[in-house]
Image 1: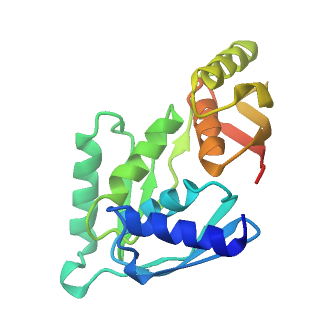
Image 2: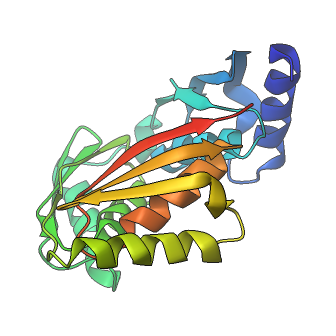
Length: 216
């Protein structure tokens, strides 16, 4: 796929996605790397724009340079924004009470410790939906239990085989205490992210070393 065609496909996907206001987003593509530039109105939209671009076959990486600008009448005082973020986190059953948040000029910093990566991801997702958030710094520490390495390796391989989005026979899984290394070839960012998510779901994982190659 040429750079021009890839650029057009990504731009069309952004306009197609109702969660993204694509009117102010400029798209460029070079050697599989897609760059997004412009100004949007929320952090949530910025993340959705990345997801939309990653869905396109041929995209190897997304460089999201979008700036979030909150309109003056929608800006929030730091204390009010922190209160709304903490309320949203508290109402989410997947986020433990150990997670805390601090807000400064629209930038929310998440701290604390959790046992699973999905809890870190959920806290980031929930925070990004709160009106007035410009950016999120996720400093939540991952402190999981440590099960047996071979058991983790087997569980991850079975998870990869079950996922219809992943051609598991092309992937290798290696484990060391707390770390999973993924090797092999995938056809898209979407497939790579699915494999990485499957690895993160295993108990005891503190780090995923993504060495997967995206074949265009």
